[in-house]
Image (cartoon, rainbow, N blue to C red; front, side):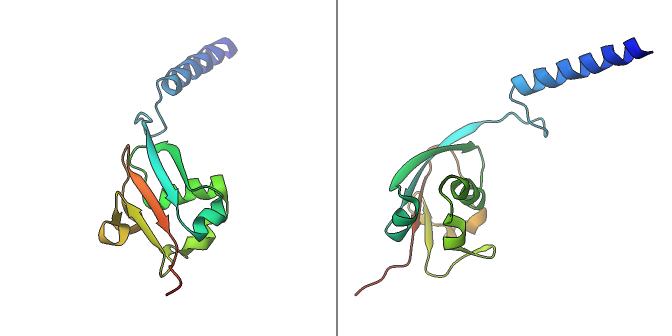
Length: 125
């Protein structure tokens, strides 16, 4: 009985390794990375220390999920631009030149080659 359990475990491990090497995730959909261009303007540049960058993320990621990814990379971004689960007033996020508020908000889905620009409140006169 012990040997048959080991054989079964080895078979399950082999199947798991095949699935992982094929790029399959738990939901059995292949992981398809996409590249996004990201820009941080004005005080958000000061916060991140980066004017523009490219990130590789899963296809179909939302703007909200992108913020999580960028927060892990740069820190403090989420606290700066979000209030609870909403974008703070006066902050804007553009996807390919269009404000997310006119798309699907923070749930706007992103695709390969999209440009996402984070814009802080403007001051001055």
